[in-house]
Length: 358
Image (tube, rainbow, N blue to C red; front, side):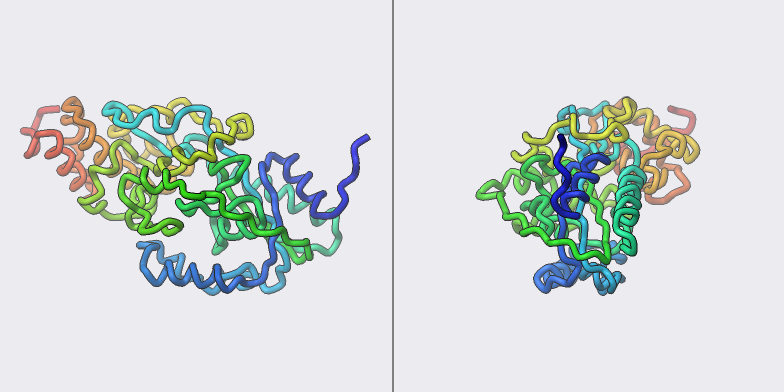
C-alpha cells in the first residue's frame, strides 16, 4: 500500500517528480533584503554587460511579490540534463566545434514550461481557488537564489545552483502561487575550499568566488553579446561556439549527476555533439534555421553564430578552412566580415585570397 502524501507540499513534490523534475522545493515569495542587495551590487558594478533587461525590470526581479504582489509562495524546480559524455572531450580539437551541453537537445524553454504548466494545472485542480504563474528563464525571476532559498541546492562559487544529488546540470523553473506553502530551510553552502570552477574558467570571469562578471564569460560573449567579441577574449574562446561548460564540467558535485535522470527531450542531437567547423561556416540563413529548428541556438541568428564559428576557425590552426573564411570576409554583416578577417590572419593568410580562389 502506497502512503498518501502527508501535506500539500509533499503532494506537489510527488507530482513534480512524476512529471520529470529532479528536485522540488518551496520558498517564501516575500522580498529577501540580502538577495536584493546582491542583485543591486552586481548591476551597479556593470557585471551584466549589455543585458539591459536585467536592470530595466529591477523592481520586478528583486522579489516574487515585486512581480506579482498576490504571490505567497514559490515552488522552485529543477530538471536534469546531465550529459552521458564528457563535455570537455573536444577541447583543443581544430576540426570540431563545441556547443554547450544544454543546447544540444530540444529547447529547454519549451520542454520545461510544458511540465511546469502541467504541474500548475494539477495544483489548481487540487486546490480550487489557487492562482499560479509559471516561469522558465523568460521573466524577471531570480531562479538560482530562489532555488537556494527553497532548499534544492546552493549557489556555488561559479554562481550556478548545485544540487548535492544532481550536481549543476539542472534547468531551473519556478511556479509562483497564492497558496501558503511552508518554506524549506535554505540549502547550506557545500563548496568548502574547492576552487575547481574558478581555476577552470578560460577568461577569468570570476573576480571573486560567488561573483560572475558576465562581460568576461564565454556563455555571455557567444550568446548575449551582439557586436564583435573583444580581442582579449577571442583566443580564449578556443572552439566554443555556443556557451561554455568548463566551470560546470569540473565541479566535483557533478559526479553524483546521472545521465539516466535526464529526460528524453534533452538527449543530444548527433549532429550537435561534435559538429564540424567547415560545415557550420557554410551555413546561410535558411540553412541555419533548418539546422537549429527547435533548438535554443536558433535565437541568436545566423550572423552571430557564424561570427562565433569564425573565431573558432581562427583558433583551429586548420589552414584547410582558409577558403571558407576568406569568402566570409565579404559577408554582408560587418561583424561577420571582421571576424573572418581576424580568423584569416590567425590562420596565416594576412590578406584576402585573390578573387577566384576557394
